[in-house]
Amino acid sequence: MAGSFPWEEDIWEGGLSPCYVYYGREDYLAELFIRRLKEALMSPDAVGSNLERFDLEETRWADIIAVARTAPFFFSPWRLVVVETSEESKRELSSVDISIIRDYCLSPAAKTILVVVVSGSVKKSHPLVRL
Image (cartoon, rainbow, N blue to C red; front, side):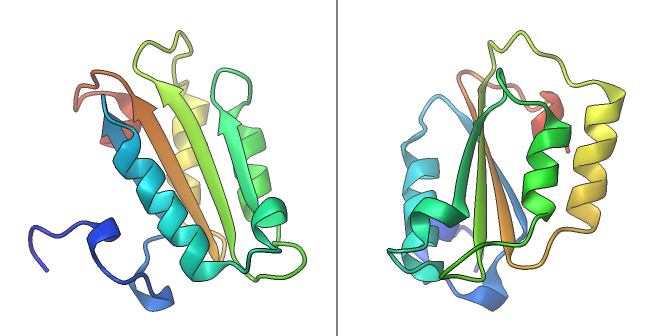
């Protein structure tokens, strides 16, 4: 539906994209979407083991994508991988990082959703937004 956002609709398995990028000064909508994904796809027992959060300042893209490609554990077939960074981040995306991300988005892991949250005043030319 034109003009709608993922947090405004019912979340169902067939209607999900394997990768989302949220950017801007307000992180609330991204967190709302992540919460709705957890509620719709994971049992309360599985959230702790099948939700992975990464700070891009502390973790390399190769490591994040390796986790995303790993099969989920325990109570739910779904895995949610959340990557947080900011526009002010001093870490630049290398050509290797871009290749890793692009390859993953073209061939994502089944039942895994990658959500990238870039907070701050973000330009559309930001490498993560362009991907």
